[in-house]
Image 1 (tube, rainbow, N blue to C red):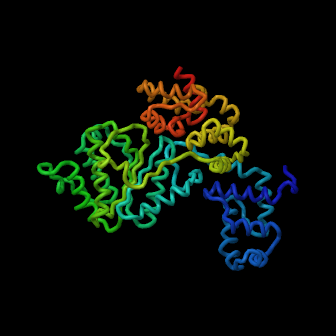
Image 2 (cartoon, rainbow, N blue to C red; image 1 turned 90 degrees about the horizontal axis):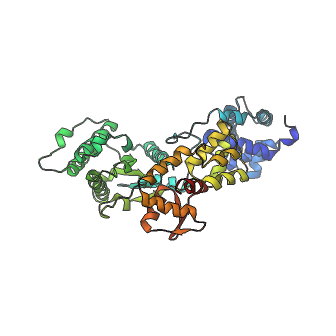
Length: 441
């Protein structure tokens, strides 16, 4: 049991901030900290208002009441301005924060739910995307290697649009049957059908599809222009996730992406096409040569997701009930950088399965480590492209940055395996250096 003298204002503030961060995904606001500190020091709302220049009514009803209500929910007892200090001390002594954290931590797989506190906001990127999707004929391109958060970001863009009364459609191309993906007309009819379903519109493909005169792209465009976009009275945001699923199918990919590019260009000219906003996500792990005038990948707003920084990781450690110091954050980042999935997987094992961080890092690049499946997936890809495997072997065995062929740099960087330094590259993280030094030699 901790003594009363140990429970200082600084500890109390950090404790409350962690609880709020875990439950809402946001830190305490400045005004909430002012109210808590004033109450901690025994000040009245009149005193706090006089010090900070706010009205007493605002501090009491708008800030204070909501704050005490939130803390009541988080701590599992009724919290007021008068008793909050004792309530916090009891929770701190009993380590309640750690206990409710570790029982709610989900395994890090797939996208992060839109209301999850474990979603890490990239404020500048999200603001740009939210601002862009409101514009007529917008096109947003989200690119990053796998497991970097593309789908999670797309879901939040769609959710933002829905809050503004836009119609939203989400299609995951990873779920489409291969038989459909290999045939352009089947694929575009599938696209029209699925968009119509999510817009709650009747399937009228047979009324608009003219195979005698029009090609598949033209038929699909007509269906959108004369039916789908005409039948609704608000903008539509079409989210196409995992579009790299169709990269290998040359009979489909060029025509399909050319059509998307033409839709985006139509949005600059025609009123009806202003209604359509496109959000495309792809992992850039496969290079496809497309005519630059037909490709959607050199149009619209590009969004490239990067790694978490040290502050992101420290906040995540709090959400996992770990409350790591800077040294522990640095140790994890030296091994895996700020890769979102690799970071969260480590925290899941440490917090939920009680694996020691030191042991986890020692085993990280081995077959017994928690990253073995992730690493073997990359190895399988590289084994199918020997030249690329040989290029990565040069990188991981060299203590200095390595100069490679520009296309090799592009492919390895797109896969997320290297970092670029002008015309040279180094391994993205120590995990990849250790593992591929062993398996590629």
